[in-house]
Figure 1 (cartoon, rainbow, N blue to C red):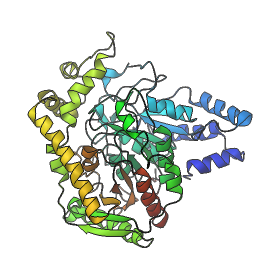
Figure 2 (tube, rainbow, N blue to C red; figure 1 turned 120 degrees about the vertical axis):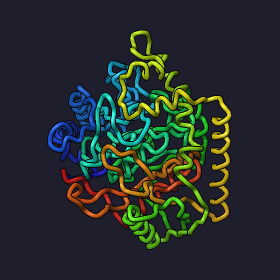
Figure 3 (cartoon, rainbow, N blue to C red; figure 1 turned 180 degrees about the horizontal axis):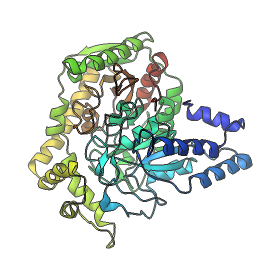
Figure 4 (cartoon, rainbow, N blue to C red; figure 1 turned 90 degrees about the horizontal axis):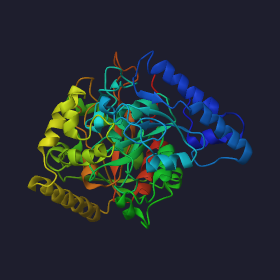
Length: 483
């Protein structure tokens, strides 16, 4: 399967070698062949019934006036907790199976204005509450590189679908690990931007403090382009006001196209590397990436500072403290025809995947106004200061570590050892890039994908994209799955 970048696709369209309709038909054919048949990845919840019509309209527009935007005719996959006016938005829950938003989310409007076609809404871990991508509405999504494993999550439908060629790229959301986990598990690029760079209005919320959307793509260039299109001030999301006037925002595609890694100083957070046999192949892949970046001029500094990702999830993250408060605000707006109007209604209905029951019950038992909640917010602020001081002391541009300390888990097991929480609880930007594969096995003919993660200061997505693009050039690790 050929995997051209969006820029390459547009060049082919302008030369008359490819139409948007042909591209969309190819994606639809792959969904037909591999999602519900063949390996049955089970990533897609619903296909846009107007996809082919929209593709034809894009082709007619190209003949008449040229490209209508930087995403002209590009079919995208959208995690189904992002509102669309022309397709239902369910968060993967049977409780919301008939939820039809009145308008598109802000970022969806930006994607459409740029010419994109939302080809399909895809599965997620129900209400985005964990990382295996299983839901009461969509069931279990499988990893296209190893059908015995999960695709990560919670944006695993986006990750599995993009990896399998169901769309050219996609969008997920990220509260703790949820864009970078499926990027790591599916040999993709995933970006969690600085909190406030992308609007959250029109997203089914989880945690106002930590929620963001982010692109998932097969290469750094495409991820940068989606980020550039989606970024911008939204009056409906006050946090986006912080992005206005930031000198380092914007021009992400240019940063990805012209990486300058020489002299970039990157701190290796050894405390986030795994130990034992399960981590051997992951750590070797990360070391290979570090060595490759050294050959193009990046400098690496060993850091002894201690960070414990598991402790950050348990003791610093506020995702479960805010879930009931923030989800209830959304559910109450759905109107009298909706079957649920609160998280407690969801619990009382019993209409949710049993795998999220403990999380939901824990969420309703926690307070978003209690002492523990405010202690966590204070700890997040302290942690932001700690990271900035380390970067200042060592003159660092970024940190590096494996996104996941071991391989993505088998179906039926909980995700463990993920390090994305460090960016989530600080709101700092991070990017995950393909780092390699494990050894091949009976269930993984190419091996299981491994991802490397970089974190930077707030609003330095361009710097991270330069580092990621440099790594992609000197050590290309993207391979489509053998379906």
